Image 1 (tube, rainbow, N blue to C red):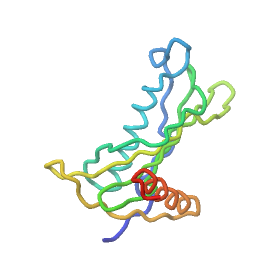
Image 2: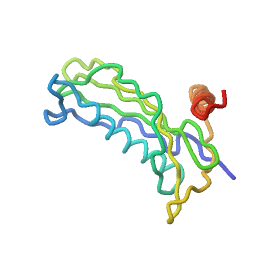
Image 3: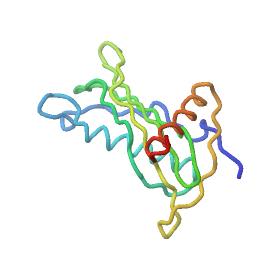
Length: 154
């Protein structure tokens, strides 16, 4: 089965502004709101890679690194890190940009596992992903380590 390069499906600079209704009582972005954004983004990347409907199987290693505040611009990035027979890992990173100072800070990184499904919602085979850069090769290798750990195959 022929593969598809990472660059064919990745998304960078998906931009979202943090509005007052996105904030918790501490004045920072609700974790659930940012998770909604990145789950949607990761699903789009998975769908672009497979050309099929993809469903979230799991989310690993969600790290809320820094808070985002009202008015911050969220710059979201996502790409397929690795594929297996019927599943794939999509890595996501979100950076908050202060629109006044243009200072950047990472607010979230996470790894999503998706499965492509047919019209009967049964898992189907996924085409391989082809890493193109040394960074993508590193993420490709690390994805397999995470999967083996998750499946208890250390």
